[in-house]
Length: 126
Length: 419
Image 1 (cartoon, each protein chain N blue to C red):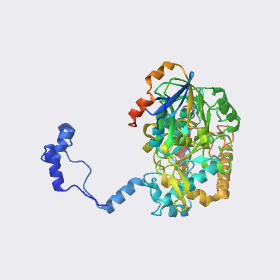
Image 2 (image 1 turned 90 degrees about the horizontal axis):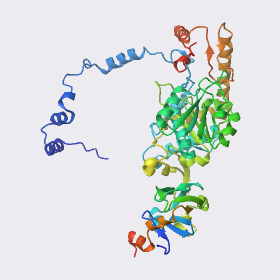
Image 3 (image 1 turned 180 degrees about the horizontal axis):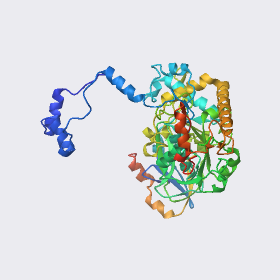
Image 4 (image 1 turned 135 degrees about the vertical axis):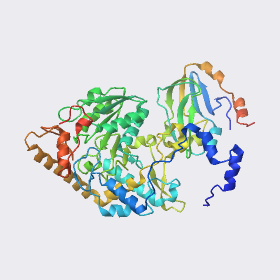
């Protein structure tokens, strides 16, 4: 499932802009490919991240994946609920399974991201 | 499994595909004419097995070993009593392998033994988690410092000059590229000289060896608050035998504890095999190096053991694995497990008491000789440094004629400490 109204990356992250804050997570397609998520190594609040660079890592039972920041900026909040319940990402990737909130340093960067329609095309879902 | 060697036909097929007439021709083309040895090797004529064994025994008898001499050498490798039951148990064919098996869950016996090892070590050092062991204490320390640097995103590593000098070398060889080392000197007590003053917000970790290379017990409790206040990690290097009496590293506030497990029932054998003990607080478990065994239940609800948290390891995490170690010292860890089990809690305590009493008795007798005094004033465990009225190497040489391996010349690693 691809949710309308979000920005997407080729690496299967999504971002939802609320003013200059971007809420980010991984897509439903990504969680499905990974399988049961057992751990997430969250970044620290205050970390500055760059578009396309490492944001955090997610562990499934037999795989580890890097999550890249869809936009540049400073991490202002992380979803600490995921520490004890990482499987929330499997159940609700676009909602309660959000990962971090980034205060964007350059909102224009969203131009580099994909729309829902473009992302659907990328994963072959029409 | 079928063993299928290359047949003559296979070899001919491969050679003709490559355009060579013989294997010799292929090798010559691959290595080049100049690199090929044309003369026969000067290794003498073939001799019978019986002759060979005698010849090798003659050569081996030139060695001075702890079998024939009384050793006071220490300095990182210790000649301790090993109960005969230990060898009998670890020599069982089901156990007699150096490594963790590649299909580990089939080997429930091995995994059970490693789980026991981890449990025993955890309770000995007072920390929540322990891995299945590493190559030796020195490489375990390198891994511990690596963990601290990675976890804190800082580079400064405070390391004592009283750490075993070869351990220091190992750590620098392993992680010299990602860390900056600051050395704390020792003072006349043999302890680190004011290590807390070097700790700042760039410090990844402070390494404390206690007992240190001189046998001296450090005051870890005094240092701990400064380390943690700065956000650094405290890494404790311990001697497992000493923990029968001394407060465990975990209780003293250590985040990671590493030690050389050789004193736990592993004989001296020309530098190996050794046993790297690595234990840490629970919060570091996902950053730990090496293999970890855990208890679980199988499909029928029966107790079983598995390798766990493998996402840390190379076969899954590849370049970003926590360590390049993907094995352990299986047999040495088993020996330590059997040793600690045979000793029991009371035995470990008694062993530590014996060590400390005998070392202090010896120190008392030695220092009653004229011109002999203790080099350092702080309390020591089972080894100690003395100052002599003559050069240490000449004294050691003379005692060798009397059947004693008397000690280690500190001057070898510490210029000026020759007497």
